Length: 322
Image (cartoon, rainbow, N blue to C red; front, side, top):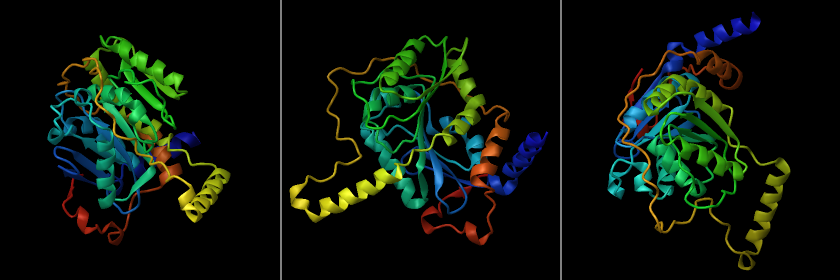
């Protein structure tokens, strides 16, 4: 009973009007992109979301908007860049994943982000892109979500750090076997995978499942921050860096965490995902109690004084969207 009372109190706290305040910017940081970010100045966790074929960034933002706001998380929905020859499909575009990092850095210049809690999710064709380019994703992503899609990586290589992965998939999607192959490929890289199988779900029902279970995905993400290096290892790394600086001529410069440019693929990725024109609405909020407990135990109330909510001039274009 005490646990129930705590959950109920947490739900009231999270659903209070001051906790729901957020700002939305359309067309930032890229054409067609949408950023929904909690009010305040403290570094905010950030979820980056990639849309499906023929879909918009605004549409793929919707399932995540309410649960992300309740948890104090910002959501950046990216529109596949037409100025880089994308024609509405992330997986067919197959562009350099460093473009994703550039958009996150643009956000970070306007609003401080929590770099240990920066995640990426793909729906349908967006999930296929993340699977296809998994080995080329940068080390910034604390965890990766594949919803309604996914194809095996384009090359047989594992990243230096393999992030945990979450699959939200239906076994009646005619391309379900590709998501299974992706999961198996990541298992060979020792990836921690959560397999959220929607039995009997085709592609349309996968979208409905995402709309209803986005809060569970958010809760899973909060439980998977980017791990910090051990203190001893961090100290050793700092000592090694100091030694390297003292004798720069004897050592090669440190490798960048950003992957090198990827040459054109010898064969295009398999044409797998349909044009995703399904439209969903967020379902009722059965997830609010679990998010509320996380808010109480890990984040506290997001209520701030009027003075603390003063915004930097770079965010002056944001409009309140409660």
